[in-house]
Image (cartoon, rainbow, N blue to C red; front, side):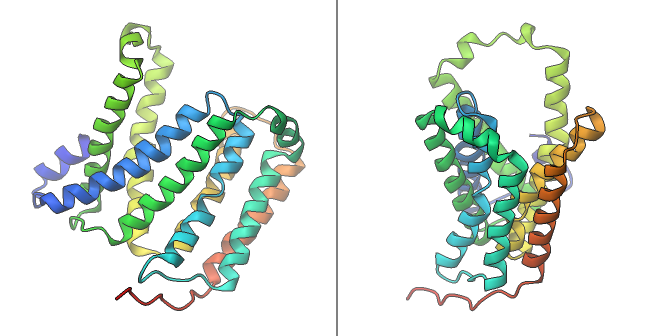
Length: 258
């Protein structure tokens, strides 16, 4: 709502019905299917297992981009880089923790996480070819507005609205929400939308490897969390993978289906 209000006041052209349709599809796939399912699944799935499953997003993104009509096949260097990056996530999470958690995985939650990664990748690929307004801020605001309606309906059908008491929300929770609005929505999500339209999908996908690494270093800086040797090894592996992907040459573009 903040972004849409800002762009309307700034004089942006009003979106067409086709643009609203495409923005709604992208928003539902990314924010309802992707983020929504991850939030739901993490109630029953260990965070390490969840992070590993979500770490497959770059692989799905690259696969769907290669398969779509007119899509771009990744070069061998990008493929190797993606696999190395996934290995870096595995090291970062701690294989010992994963091994102990694997015996108590909630299959429904794990299945929801897999579906979430697929929906996020599909929505991202669709966004590359969707009919969008000139302003990436407008398009992103349209996605979030559409997704908010979807999330509200899902929440209401799930009975969450009846149990919600706004008076019970703590100041810490409000501050966390404000942080997510400013940095998660207004900055990060807008930047992701811009990259989808302006960068190769293999390069865009590296966010899935870099984000967990940034989170750990921020935790060490802001919360005095301990950095172990494993974190530095994983950092070296992930950075090497990102450099390899960034320097790779994309393969031939798939011919559009007749």
